[in-house]
Image (tube, rainbow over the protein chains, first blue to last red):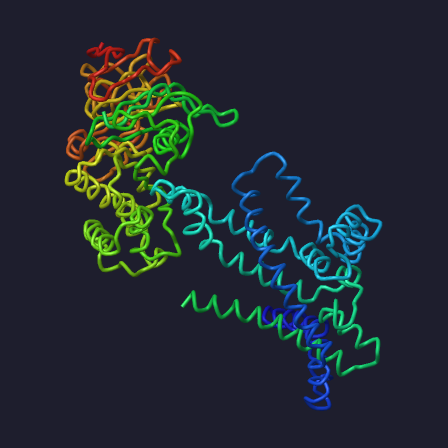
Length: 265
Length: 346
């Protein structure tokens, strides 16, 4: 009776995952290669496709390091230097989770547009934010900001302060303590945050659509490229780009797992 | 004096952890800070290390006022109850940490680390990670790490608290030997009076953020300054205004030999020692410590009526250091039993 129930629960859990997560992803892979490698390959190696891929990687290359540094710093502030205002920071950090990406895109549009608060001043200085890379980076950073903080805070709390105190009695200053003791102790929390941040930036659609204008070959990231191909009834192109996106995300996850396994061995 | 603390006060929110605490620790001594939890002993130790900042008062190490110096500048070795091992570093890496921070030469680091691992009997385990060590080994590693940088003083915060009884006893003896070899001024915190008396030359008894008394184990046991010290250092029975040690209780079957009538409630044999729990006529519960042979001679039974004769008793007048609100400076070694009135049996 007991084992039967356990198997029943297991089947239910697996079935749920299969129907909601695995089936759609498998379907994309199946559809992509339904007519062989050539059609999706052609779509993704088109100049616009390649540009979209490069732009997406550029978003990752800029947003992820910035959010990692900010995230670790912010987590340290929240956990180790619990001061007045921490509760407010703690709440504000979750905003990107709470607000729809489209709304984030719109708010950036309102700030940096021709009639926005900062738009005219920046335009005079010759800096174009909207419909170009800076705006897209801002949007990517905004939507992926909480991940490193959220993954690092519990690990920092868990390791406690004794190792850091031990380091200080051994003569280490704050900087040495951070690099030699704190960071190595929290590295897997940070790494997990980085993976989630990367995945989020790779896939960001809503906010980037609005601030980029989705101009082919100029301000189109891979998700925007997928949507455009889909709108233009170019199914192989859309599927091909989707698979590339999925593979990039999978690689990130795998890279972390490999590193972690090496570490544990 | 290697360490002196003057008028140390520390408050955490509503909790007054230290109330004008002053202690002096002679060079090369091994001193125990003894007290129940919440007595302020760990706070005092952490204040000496610079891990807590005092609200007022001074900490002097070898004559220098270090009160405003951060922990990293104080050159103290600190050992934590839960080891605080650097989990991502090997045993070697842990012990080498302080030396690498001081930018020692690689060959010197190697030599010094192995010297210390040899000292703490961990030399074969240099490449292990802390998670692969037992509790006792981890604590010895932590000790080697603290000693590597040749600290001016060694501070140990309940160093054996997380270990089981057997390992704890071994490590105690081992720490005692190590201290005899190294002569580094050491302070260790403990709530275990037996451990304090076993290891330390000097004891500082703390309670409620104050120093109650300091001195050698024998001083504190024979001349306790007040009721708290008497009951915390060793066992005690209270008979009205008088206090008497359980081993100073004479149990007799002869009515004329005793002063107090009592009923034997329970007899607990603890090996050589026997604990006889008694109830007096007025309901007071006391116990007497007898030897096995005494018990056999008396042929005591539970429920039997016996006669007690307290040997040496003590009573304390109201004017004890714990109640005057200020812990006076109490240099170690001074035999201050002045508040205790030693009286013969009534």
